[in-house]
Amino acid sequence: MFLHGYLPSILDGAVLTLKLAAAALAVSVVLGLIGAMFKMAPSKALRTLAELYSTVVRGVPDLVWMFLLFFGVQMLLNDAATAMGWAAPDIDPFIAGVLTLGFIFGAYMTETFRGAIMAVPKGQMEAGAAYGMGPLRIFLRITFPQMVRFALPSFTNNWLVLVKSTALVSVIGLNDVMYRADAAKSNTQEPFTVYMLVALIFLVITSVSNILLGMLERRYSTGLKENGL
Amino acid sequence: MIDFHLILDKLPAFLGGADGQPLLSTSDGIVMTLQLLGASLLLGMLLAIPLALGRVSKNRLLSGSVWLYTYVFRGTPLLVQLFIIYYGLSQFDAVRDSWMWQYLQDAWFCAILAFTLNTAAYTTEIIAGQIRTTHWGEIEAARAMGMSKWLMMRRIVIPSALRRALPAYSNEVIMMMQSTAVAGLVTLADITGVARRIYSDTYMAFEPFLVAGAIYLALTFLFVWLFKQAEQRWLAYLAPRKH
View (cartoon, each protein chain N blue to C red):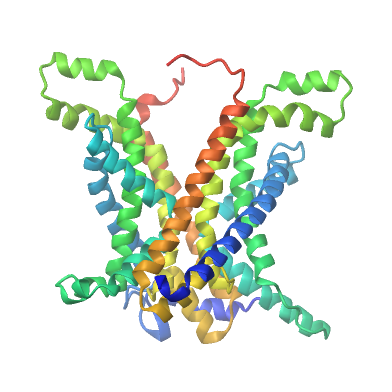
């Protein structure tokens, strides 16, 4: 039998990996939008904060962030709880994984969105204001639909790096595809087959993402005049 | 809540001086990270230049096979690639009985092999992209001088493409430096590996990984600065005019 029946377990893990990546993407998009707005805010304090966030997070490996946030923050929470005389809180590894990855990739998204918003001509937003739209409506109706085209190539890249980074979350004890693969490896004595299967799963995810996001890119470039090269 | 004594006490461990040994008495920590990075970048570049030429070749079979290689290595996580080499290859008796086994059971060798193949894939695409966008005038001039195809590649196309690849390549180097952290997951004592060792010895998580993070951040700044110097040296002719 192929992999002694470990195939369903590994595929289960792959589903968890995908869920984790999708949830982390959502967190990172929110953080990225906030970061981009802070970076362009009139307040110097907000700009410095966003600059610090995007520089420090992108300068440290994601694996180190996972150890630092998952083990480190958990210990600090435990210490704090003990000092207050409360029971130590239990952090759900899935939530921790989502928040950690979302926090890391929010920094990359900050740069993506900042560049994309800056690429939309300022007159567009001014025109919105002249029509009496509020800041939120201007963002949703004018800035956002136009910035998507500029953001998509870098967004796609960030998503692909994020998917590949999920391979690291088994270090914080998540039942993801790498964790299942480790169990399958030990029990089947077929490490090559197991990890080739995992590689194939990731290759399918990245390939499908490339195709779908490529379609989205064409959709959002509708009406764009090409340079004819 | 942060134990600064622990940080100061364990700091030398990141420079090869654990347990009161003199600094650099082993290659643990920063030296190991830089070793892994330097070796894989050098070997990766040596692989990437010929592969990039293959990638832009008019021979479909050649360019297609190089594309497949870069596609697979860029589409899968480095950790999985490392595990296939380090754990996976032992599945085959033929590998275990061959002369290669003495190298393939060594985590250090496997890490360099995996990192080399990984960075070579990204570097190939970076260089191939720059070769494709070589200005037609440079090629025309080389032909007008009567250069053969290989002479033109060697003297004109490759040097020019490598210069223009610098900004993208600096990103790749920094990404690769951070990616070497996965070496700590296959028993190697790089910066992350040392931090994990301190964690398992002391059960303190915040301090060792804080130090590791700070070291990586400092290295990132160092590389950003170095590449800025390199760009000023080799890409000055593309900088916007200042007057």
